[in-house]
Length: 167
Image (cartoon, rainbow, N blue to C red):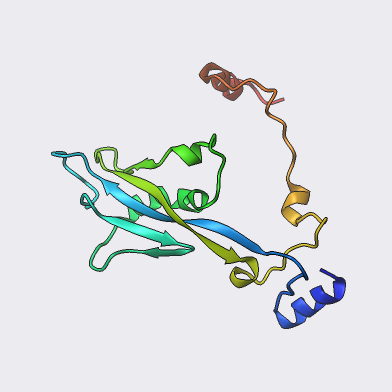
């Protein structure tokens, strides 16, 4: 984007679309289902078969059905990540069940990717995309870490790190 286009964006609030640019991205639609073990007492008010869907940013419950705010709070931080395309090796691609936050409740919430929608950047935000070849503010400030050569921490390593005195 040229300087004049950006000034126009600031003055008018309409982000310019760069010629030839594709500002689209895809998100999964999600269905989050309650899983209740047979014969177990459920503490969170959920029932087998309860569910909600997430389409883009819109969370939808079936008519007459609710969800515990505590159950919702336990799954909510994961939903935006589950909507994104992830590597098949990423745990976000394989792990789908979230425990009820009540330690005495055996229910779980299962997150299922059900379909995909395409969105346009310009339809969901007024912040313009950076010009091709320029870094965003986040990219400029993010440190680059190469952890591929580091061995994974063991439990006893973590204890040693925590117990080390400050210099």
